[in-house]
Length: 393
Ligand code: SF4
Image 1 (cartoon, rainbow, N blue to C red):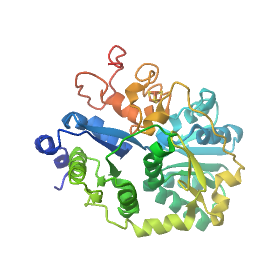
Image 2 (image 1 turned 90 degrees about the horizontal axis):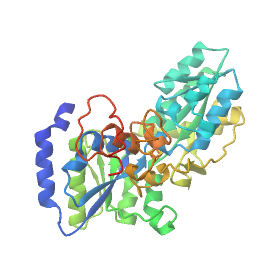
Image 3 (image 1 turned 90 degrees about the vertical axis):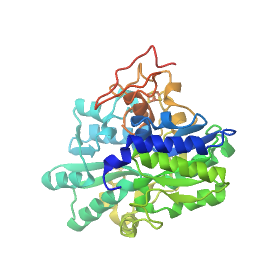
């Protein structure tokens, strides 16, 4: 296949659905986690769950960088932007809307006078620093392995240019430790019981890290992993591959996304990241708690461009809104519709938690594509209005 439309072909999807229905063992249930919010989005947008046999269940995972960002990290950025008028605080659009303490978000801090700006890339933030030499430009960097190399590149570029008015708050997190936390959760009994038969691994992350890091999950935990692209046929094919592994008693790492993922990933990108960034001892994730060696910090050689060091920023953990179920949803133990606020108090226009902010968040994906309704809703480029009468069904 050459064009993206071919990966969305309805007739092929129907054929895959029929094949899956023939192949599943009617005597058992299958529960697979799609780790990444990109897959959650595709499953909701294209109605993939509706095409699966009733005994195949998809569980949303924590792979949405905006969703797993804890309130304390957003508070840190808001505090800096409000306290220091010389600072221009930049981040990606979704990040600016994440609810933080005291009813604030970065966007609401902007309304209170902080200079907060949306950028499309780390390079945009660096360019802003070049054009605003009298200001301090701070890039609030978030993301899994996919968006880490661009952050590392701008830090290296700032160091090369000796650009003194640019720095980064580094919130980059890693996929394998989050999967480990999910798999260890029933044993640790702090994340709630969760039965899983396998994972769909993220395509874009895997272009960077390769398929090798998932091999431990197959070997140690006996959980199959299939790395898959983000189109609906990619996802359906990955589910079929997982079903086949389960039915034949295999636990292997398979790669559905052969068009971009190789076993060792992208060594050039990995080298740039490890030159500039190092593992943090620990990092707090929303929903998963504090995980050891699960995120990246800026190396001491680049300390002049580390905003946490430069401005003496301290991290203070903050609990989530009491009624928000984001934590349990990110752990895979609850669904968006289990939250009492879903679709009523909490909508994409008025998010109460991070999972309703990003388009990759499970709550936003369910809301935007009407997955909470009894009847299918066709949505073309717009949000579905809330329907409080139906959302508890
Ligand atoms: S619906 Fe809103 S409040 Fe409820 S879990 Fe999702 S983001 Fe949190």
